[in-house]
Length: 348
Image (cartoon, rainbow, N blue to C red; front, side):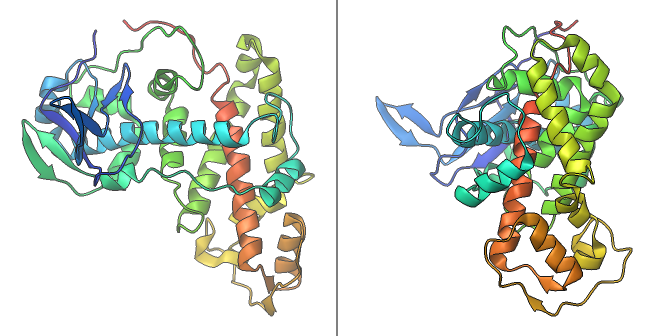
């Protein structure tokens, strides 16, 4: 079955005369340029129509309703946002000048990198500007529903079947490159874990957002459980075993008490330190005796001083921890996607 777009339906993005994501023309979705050619001149288009390609697009709204149509489009937009974030990270921070590609890396080295380099989070603001849909040429303001979006990210095939809609086609791809957007999008169609990880990643836009720890830890745990279930399969199918070993080693360091677990889930789960900002609130919240003013502490020493000496990390120390979590998760995620999650079969 062929995927196609409906000319008068989609997700409206108010660009406010600013560039958002790059133009996209892929098997799964369409996103035009912010500039439209008019009378041999380029003019700014303040509204862009993001559209999904699907065999039943002509009657999708009639079957699932406007709210689900809106949420499904936002999930696909999150896939594109996430792929752009990962590409930006790869192009700016993963190179011979910083990291040797495809080689095992110690988190200790990553800690040195985040101290030496600025590591901003790429955020196109596109998801924030996607608040309306176009339904048969009529604009409709919609309420963003993160819970509904999460259901679509985790149960897309089942929900499409429930609404009597065809599954998304899965094309044969000539390349398995993470820089090929259709490869990443196909991965999201083929595997729930890829879908939910991309959705979570697209919604990390700041080190200071309230759910930063929740989203980072969800990604790390999803990847860990996937490795436990599928490592034998990956080792059997992989043509690049060095990537497998890179992923396994980085995952082990994050979750092992002998390595850096203290700096990751040792903090993520520490309700005695973070209270409700942590992943649960089961422990009594400890008091503090002051703010840590010691400079050039390692991440492990920052956390040890916080726990044992009751010295709250300074803003700079917190930022060092945030950057370690973000950089490590980025590097793990982008290489985890490179594993042989699926064969390159065509759709039925």
